[in-house]
Image (tube, rainbow, N blue to C red; front, side, top):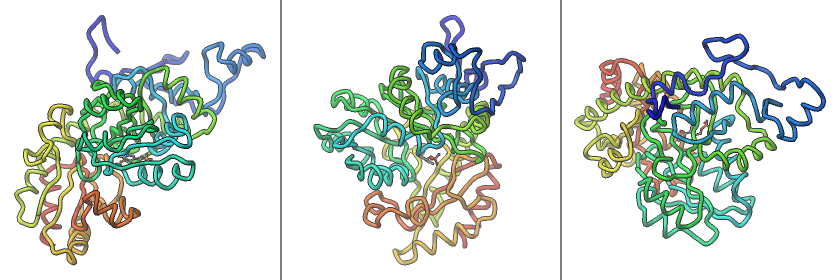
Length: 398
Ligand SMILES: *Cc1c(COP(=O)(O)O)cnc(C)c1O
């Protein structure tokens, strides 16, 4: 979205991009809650189905409200096109169904979202697709894990909950060299803080459920990338299998995107303040946050991100047997932060990854990923940072 040759900024795109008005010229984007669309004639119906005429057919694969969300998110990511899905997980599933076949191999960062690992290791494995896991922050590890049948490199950066950063330029260039599709789960940064396509990555994957909605209301997901890949490879898979975004959820997400730049910047600023405070707290062993100079990849994060995000993880000081009870005492003592696995909400949340989001992983896999029993993750919302600090202080003293 641009005016003359001057591209609009994120805030302008977030409120303006993708809007298409109906015959009523409504100012706020309309919710087209309809499963199908009417044709003027039998001949037009045939043309629409054959793809010879532009126009809406059936909401499993085409809906104007969903399309507005797709175009707004594509504009924010700087991508040519976008395909919306029912959830973040169905975005990854659709991508894999469309792009992989039995015998193919995937290299994935070991610190990606728990369900992503389950999808590769338990679901796709049954269809003859193999996955290897590597430390996402080690460019050499990605290369070492590659095989002749490697067709997909998948990373999440910064990762959840360990905040490992993958060098996007090196990641994209390895994918090109191997002839493998590179995909980045851009959940934590959102397009406001990081645009992986700029570094040559092929596809950006999103969960709409987290920061894009931002208010913990709906599930949604999306894939952003080159128009030919989206329209010719991904869309046919979605059309056939049906994990489509509902128009209502698309409308909620479209409205969510409008405030995304304001929210993520405010939440990141509070997160940085809390991370600094936690780092100096006597009950805290270490803080994982890319905005801290102590983070081993702070310089890389500074280079490829426009901010550090709203999620902070920290480990408490405790002996091994005391670690879980210590973390749980903190979580149970806070009153303001919500105990929930969701993140990206305007309301701050607190989670114990080892027993919740990453609880289904085998203990040795969890250990390898560095997710200890004393690790606590907070996702900072829009409350006053002083109130959050006061609340966490109560938990740290518990
Ligand atoms: C939540 C989450 C997902 C999955 O998204 P859903 O919308 O819940 O399916 C994927 N990646 C990350 C990083 C997440 O936090």
